[in-house]
Every structure is written in C-alpha cells, then in structure tokens.
Image (cartoon, rainbow, N blue to C red; front, side, top):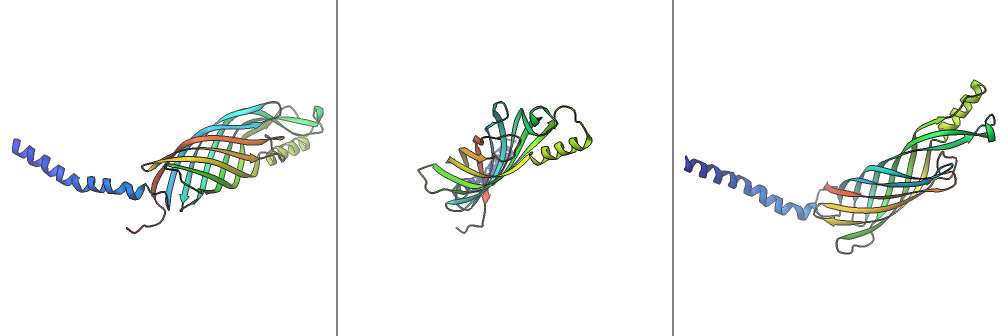
Amino acid sequence: MRSIRTLTAGLACAALLPALAAAQAAPQKLRSFTDSWYWGAKGGVSMFGAVAENINAPTVGGEWMITHSRVAMYVSVEQAFFQTQGAVYDPSSVGSARIVDVKDSRRYNAQLFAFPKQYGSFRPYAGLGFALISIRDAQPEGTFVSPASQDSVLQMVNDASSRTTPVFTLGSQYDFNRSALFVQATAMPTKNRFLINGKSTTYMIEAGLRYNLTDAIEKLH
C-alpha cells in the first residue's frame, strides 16, 4: 500500500513538473508591458459643482487598456453616486428656474495614453480623449401650469442630462508581475448646458489595479 502511495505521489509530481516549468517561464512573457491587454478595476472620487453645493461623489468603474510600446488605447466606464439638484429655464417658475432633483451619473470614456518614459517599475502617463457623461435620474420638482409647459421642461431636462466633453488625464502605474497599481487624475470641462457643472469643471481622482491578461498580438520568442 505504501509503495502504491509513493508511486502515485511520484507520478503526480512528474505530471506537475511541465506545468511548474511553464509557470516559471510564462511570467517573462506575460509581464511585458508592450503589446498587451490590461483589464482593471478602480475607485475614487468625482468632484463637481451643483446649483447650491460642491459635490464629492464616490466613484467605481472598470477599464480596458491595449498597450503598444509607449502608447495605449484606453476605454473605461465609471459610476458616480450622489444626490443633488440642478435647474433648467422655466418662465412659469419663480425666478424662471425649475429645480431638478439629480441622482447619480455614468461616464463612458475613451482616451489615448502616452507612456513617455519608464523609471524602474514606475510608468508615468498622460491621456487625451473624449467622454460621455450621463445623469442616471433627473426629475423636475413642482407642478406645471399646462401640459405644454411640462413637455417643454421635460425636454430641456432630457437635453441637459448628458454631455460629451474632452478628457485630460495624468497618472502613474507601478508594475509588478502581471499586475499594475495605478493612480490618476482627470479633468473634464462640462460647463455648457448641463444639469451639473453649470459653472465648473468635473475632476476625478482614481486608484486601482490593472491585470495584464494576455498579449494584444502574437509574440515570437
């Protein structure tokens, strides 16, 4: 019985040797930053000005990054959680402003990142692109003098609930094995006819983890 156990253990170890050897060899390939697909998760804070207050909203999101040698294509989605108020023009309301209850927003973001230089495991980067910011829920307050007035306000609320804006990003990531920790700051000018940010720019500070899932192109060794 002991011989059978010893033989079984020996066969199991022999079967695992190729996998262990492959696991030791694989990181050199998979750790390469160049021509890789990174998937990531992140959290942070979104800062903007509403009608009567400044908002610091917790934010979570996911991202996808395809790298070359010193540039990368970057796509992400973020959700910000908050409750505040905005306003749209309504001549039938006091002060010609109809208050709108606003809840949460979502951002769809696409940028081109540049990684100009590497300092050991650190890679600073800068990004430029566009984002679509959409309010998840917006409800005008009060009653309306007529159905036509209500339809007009609802249309203005709908038009002011989303905005496309340029995005500017500065960040840095720290590489280890197949993963990378990162922190980045983003600025988005959203001053034009938007339920939030009527007089200011949206800023985001985020941190998270990226994982080098696979090569973007087949590499020959």
